[in-house]
Length: 397
Ligand code: AMP
Ligand code: MG
Image (cartoon, rainbow, N blue to C red; front, side):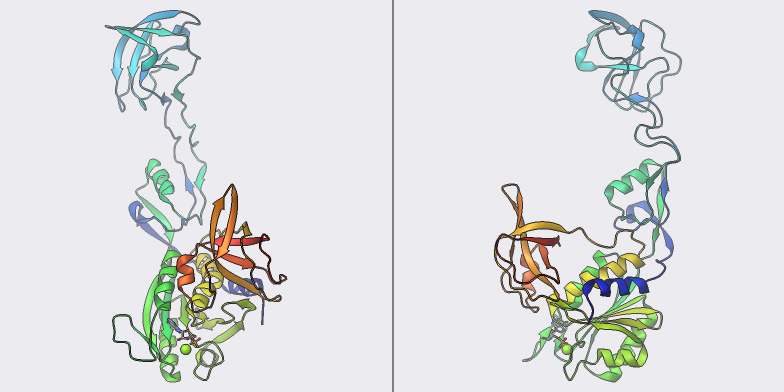
C-alpha cells in the first residue's frame, strides 16, 4: 500500500510528453490549453488616446488658475484620426478611445468645460490628465499569456485585441471510458431486481470533459474475463488513457487486475486513503490505465486525486493541482491515523471566517454527499480523530 502523494508522484512520472498542438478558431478556444506563448506584436493601446469624452488640448494651453477660451477646430469620434498638428490656442473635441491629435497631451472632460459656439472654456488641470498612453496595457514583444495556461474568456479577449483569429492549443487527450459489473445497467433501460443504474460513467465522463479530455465511451462491460480483455485491448489502442470503474477490489468477480496483468502492467493498486483504497494504475500498450473503484464517491475521488493531474499534464497544463485552503470545522470527525481521509463538506464564510461541516453520512456509495457538498475535507495521514473547532484543509469542488 502506498500513500496518496507517492501514488500521485508515480502517476505523474509515467506521463511524459503533453499532447501536440492543433489550431482552433478563437471562439472555439475557451477551456483549451495554450500551446505557444502569446506575444504582443504591437503596443496595446497602439497610440495615446483619450480616456474620456472631452477636449484635447496642449498642456501649455491649460491655465494654471482661472479659465481660458480655446477655439474648437475639429470633432473626433472614436476611430477618426486628426491629421495635422494642434496649434496653440486650439482644442479638438474628442471621444473616448480616439487617438490624441499630435500636439495635444491633455483632455478636459466634457463635464468640466463650458462650450460657447465654436469655443470652449477650460480650467486648471494636470498636464497629461485623461490620456491613456500607448503601450500602457501591453508593450510590443512581451509575453502576455504563458504556454500551458487554461484559456478563460479574458485570455480570448486579449488574443483578439492582438488581432488573432485563431490560436494553437494542445490537442485534447483521448480517454476511453467504461464501467464494469454484471449488475450495472444503462439508464433508460429496464432495471431488474439486483441491478443498479450506471452512475460512474456519467460522473467520470463529466469529470474528464471538465479536465479537457475527449471521451471515447465504451459502455458497460460485464464481469467476464474474455470480454474485459477484448474491450480493454480495444480501448488502449484507441486512446491515450483508459479509465474504468468497478472490479478492482478483492471480490470473486473483481477481474481488472488479473486482466491488466495479462495484457499490460500494474504500477500499484492500493492507496492508503479512504474512500477509494483499491485503485489500479498501470498501462496497456501506449495507453495509461486507471482502474477506479466501483463505489460512486470512491471513483470520483480517485479521479480527482490521480486521473485529473495526469490528464492536466497530458493536456499540457502548467498547474496540476487545485488550491487547498484552511477552515475551522464545526463538528468532530472520526479519522484513522495512517491513511489520508476525505470527507465531503459544506464550506461557508461566517463572520469573516471559513467554516466547514460535513454533508452527513460519509459512505463511499453515498453519491448525494458530493451533490450536497461543495468541498473535500482533507485529513492528513498523521492525524487521528478531529475535534470540533480544529483547523482542517479543504479543497473546493
Ligand atoms: P466493485 O468495486 O465492482 O465491487 O463495486 C463496488 C460497488 O460499487 C458495488 O456496490 C457496485 O454495485 C457499485 N458500482 C460499481 N460500478 C458502478 C457504477 N458504474 N455505477 C454505480 N455504482 C457502481
Ligand atoms: Mg463490480
